[in-house]
Every structure is written in C-alpha cells, then in structure tokens.
Picture 1: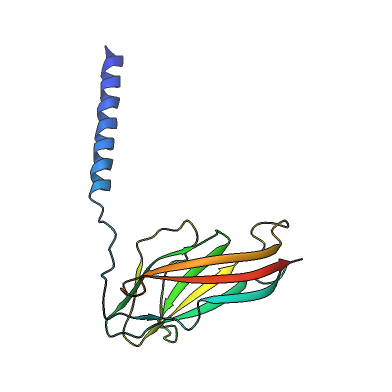
Picture 2 (picture 1 turned 120 degrees about the horizontal axis):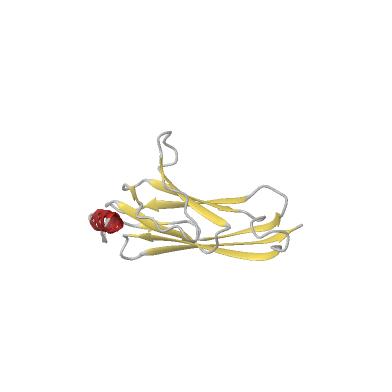
Length: 169
C-alpha cells in the first residue's frame, strides 16, 4: 500500500513539473520580426574580399565590411549566418562611438532573434573572422566562405558577402 502511494505521488509531481514546463515554454515571447521599409537603404562598398595566402600557423584572418544606412528610415539587420563553423561574424553599430552596440558573435549554426538598428546616415561594421586552423592540418588549400545578413530594406532584403583565400602551411 505504501509503494502505491509513493508511485502515485511521483507520477503527480512529474505531471506538475511537465505541465509547468510546457506552460513556461508556451508563454515565452516570439522573436521580434523586422519591419520592411521603403525608406531604409542598405549600402555596401564591397561584398567580396580575397585574403590571398593565409598562413595556417598565422593569426586568424579578419575582414571588416561597412554597411551604411543611406536611407531616411531605420535599417534593421538580423539573421547573420556564416557558411562554416570556422567563420564567425559580428555586427558593430556605429563603430566610431566608444559605446557602440555589438551583436552576439554569429556562426553557421547560430540562430538568434537579435535585430540591430542603424539610424539614417549611420554605419555598421560586419567583422568576419576565419579560423584557418579550425579544420586541422588537412584543412589547407583554397577556401570560400559566405556570410549573409537579412535587412528590412525592400530592395536589398539579404546582403551576401564572399571571402576567399588559400590556406598554406
């Protein structure tokens, strides 16, 4: 009889925990969505870069792309992704400001609800870092990495950046 009470008690506690967890997850706010704008204008002076030779034992290869809001409305940047886990990307809004806002560091699998806002006339830096030793000694040779950034600019809803190089020993 005591075993039945213990089992029933354990089942009841388990159900309470499960129901509470489901309610907690169900009440989490949905990620914010960007608002398409005719007046936000994403402008970049370059979308590709060739590192040339990248020494396997050297420092990580880095490149900064500028993204300017040439429009009159707020430019929203979101869903930053890289084509490989060996490559990371971060957005720094108004990089000349000592209190510049920094995004999380994104990679291939990072899916975050982060939205960066670049006001009219302001710039953001897209800082890309490639770790050439990530794939080990067999990871030498030509590479191509892609970074994508979604925007609320209706004429440029997705910015794509291409980086190439040749990893050498």
